[in-house]
Image 1 (cartoon, each protein chain N blue to C red):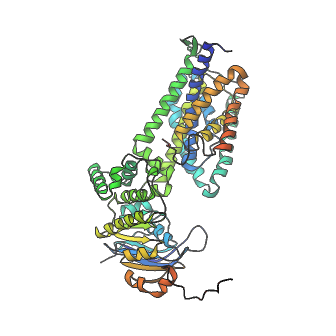
Image 2: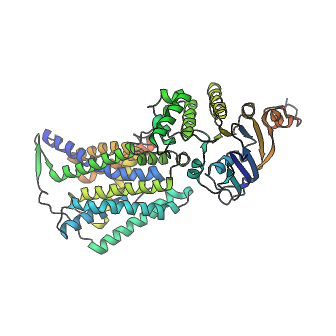
Length: 249
Length: 295
C-alpha cells in the first residue's frame, strides 16, 4: 500500500545557491508521526516547503498516495490533501479568528461542508470557539498556533506538515500543542513534524529521521533513536564525548 | 481673529478635502500593502483620469462623471497588467527600491504623453453647476466639492465592503498579511495581488475624476500631489487603509485651517511637517503599528 506522502531522492535549494537537500528520501504513513531532527541548516524546514509545494525541487519525485505530484504548487498540493503549518506564527494577525479559520476552507465550495468543518475545529480547538471574533494577532503564542492548526484542518487533510510547532511557546502551551499533534495522528492523519525540541518530538513521534547535510543520516522507530547514545550526544542534550578544556582559574 | 463663519467654512472644506485625500491615499497604501511597492505614478494616473474626464466633457459634451464608466475598468485593467507584466518581475530583495524607479519612469511617461496629446496648457472643466454653492450656517460650500466628497465616500465605502465582506477581499488581506500562509490555504496570491493592484489604480480613476470637477489641470500637476499623498500614507502607517483615511482627514482639515493665517502655499507644509514628525517619533505611522487594523 502506498504511503500517504513520499519524497524520493529530492534535491532542492534556494535560488542559485548550493542545494540544501541532497538526495533526501522520506515517507509518511497514515496515522503516524514522522519527526525530522537535526542541526540548524540541515534542511528540515526545506523538506516541508518542498512537500507542500512552496519550493519546487530541482530533482527527485514527490508522491501522494502513489500519485506523482512533483512540481505542483501549494494549491494543488492542498487539493491532494497536504496541509502545511509554517514555522513561527503565520496567523493572519489583523484578521479575526473566524476569518482565519474560514480562510482555511478557502478552497471548499460546498457551504454545508464548510459549516461542518467549522463545527469540527471549534470542538477540537476550544480556543477557536471562545475567541471567534477576536483579532488573531491579539491571542497568545499557543492560542495562535492552535488557530493555525484549526485553519490547516479545515480541508480535512490526509497529511499535515508541522514546522516547529512549539517554537517560542511556554511549557504549558507546548504540551497543549503536542496533545493536538497526537490527536491528529489518532484521527488517522499522517504527520510530518520538524521540531527543535528533539527529545519532546521523538517522545511523541512514531518514526524519527535524523537529517544532516541535506540527507537522512539515520532513521528508525522514534523510541530507538531516543535510546541511541550517538543521537543523545548530538541533539538531545546528552553529555558530549569530546573532552572539554580545563576550566580557567 | 477669523470669524466663526470663516472657521466653519474652513472646517467643512477641510473635511471635504480630507475625504478626497483619503480616497487618493487609499490606492497608494494598498499598493504598498500588497507588494511593498512605492507607486510614484499613482498621482500621474490621477491626472490622466482628470484629463479623460475633461476630454469627455469638452469633446463629447457629456458630464465628466460619466467618464468613470470607461476610466474605472480601464484603470483596473492597466493596474492588473502593470503588476503582472512589470512589477511582478522585479526581484523581491530590491522590489521597493526598484519600484520607485520603475513607477517614476511611468509617471514621466504619462506626463509626456499628456503634454504631447493636450499640450501644457492649463485646462479646467466648465460645468453648469460649477459655480453653484449651498449655505451651511453662514458658510458657502461649492456643490462640486460636495460631489467630489460624495464620490470619494462611495468609492471608499465600496473598497471597504469589498475588502471586508467578500471572499476576494479576505484573500487580498490574507495575501497582504502573510503571503506564504495565504498560498498554503489555496489562494492564488499572484492573481489576487494583480487584482488588488487593479483596484488601487481604479481608485485613482475615481479620485482623478473627482479632482477634475474643481481643479485646473496640467500634465505636470501630479508632482504637486505625490508629496502630500506619500506623507499621508506614512503618517497613517504604510499599508493601513483606515490609517491613511484618518491621516488624510486630519491633515486635510489642518491644511484648510492653516490657510487662514498662513496662505495656501505655506499651509501645504503641514504634510511635510507631519511626515518629519512621523519619521522622527513614530516611523511605523501614528495610526498603524504592529496590529494595525488595516481594513
